[in-house]
Image 1 (cartoon, each protein chain N blue to C red):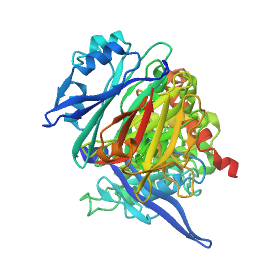
Image 2: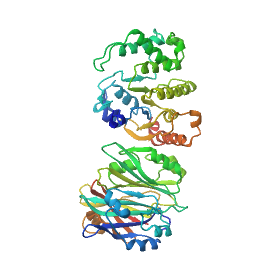
Image 3: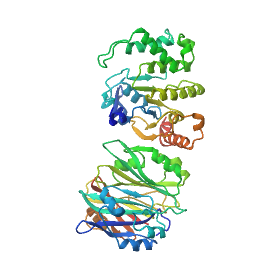
Image 4: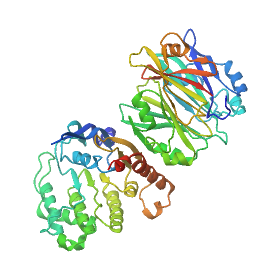
Length: 295
Length: 278
């Protein structure tokens, strides 16, 4: 595991047997041992803590500072250099499958941003920034993001919205799909990766990660999506720290019943697979893809 | 007026515009959704052929959409009307009439006859004359009232065009590259005057422009359109610069610079392939 990824830890929580609490399901914590130790002891009721609040709200929640009184693991987070978190509840067939929480760091040498975009279909056709964490990227980038809205199919958030599946943009500064290219280049951001998020409020949410060459989003991300017949999962693309662009599909196909990737797709419950965490991606109450993330 | 009517003063929903040509159907616009709030100044920007003027003509009621609908103040736009006044790049003044008479013509048509739909009585000549003088004063042309278009400058002609539009007290002012034919200095002067007029009248404005600085200086919202054919709205940039705006002060405002760069990037980096194709 590299020490310099923008995402520092990932954990997932699953409903207990009686459905009243969220229990720790597993995670990738890397060198954040104190945080991991503090995490394994916890559970959250509906509305409690970040995972519980995301469950209660029914949509993604970003916590831009982990020193907030409501964050139980503040001391451990500070000790391990974690500064921001985003909780993604995932629903399928109207039931909560999991809450995945990603943690990032604002260390001086880390450059990146996380943005949560949303659209309220009954109010507007625009996708606007709901919340953003910009670390050391400076305020120009944040300023433009907060003043830009996207239509379905345009820009990184808009394309993710339209495709209802993860989108990767390998070279933001030169691509034709990134509005904020000029500002991005100035702060060293050159890659974008966005995933659709589940919700129960009828709104559309997209989580976007923007990272720099020196600070990749993760050490590797693989995306699997069902084929047209919904009979297999196809390895859509992957990107890794050492690779300049996403690797095109190598036509790996998995049957929907014989492996961890397929299991995660079927159940909506994440699982550890070696050094990766496999998590489902959902939009509008159905699972549309699976990510395997290594830190 | 309730909040929904205020924020959706112009409501464009699912609009598509397909023209029949000898080479077959040509889709100029598709999937256009746009709302304009009352008192908002919106700039439409994009490369040539992206359907900006087509969209403006749809709002003006000069053409009907193939699909979708357009509402202004909660009423369907079914044709042209004085509630949506248009200012074209070509001022279109009648050369044999004075500035006063050019403006008076529209004023008489709108206010000189009783209106059953609005319940207003017709105005007498003195009232119509007063309206006309007020409109010309608003654009600073009182001294040129009795001059004909051939006797005034390009900038002054465009001011008459603006006065003519404003004299009708429209709900919406639609401007299709109104300063495009003017030199840079005159253009800047008229932009400043338009800022002043809009501030006084609190008009709702939709303006087509190619000028990035003009869009950022004047508008509350910049609607960036993708390249045609089948153009649609790409991104929308909210310009939250305080008003009144002063171009000299804004030249060094970092937010102004950032907005400007974002629009330039959209036009000349991300939508630049239209140039290469040409």
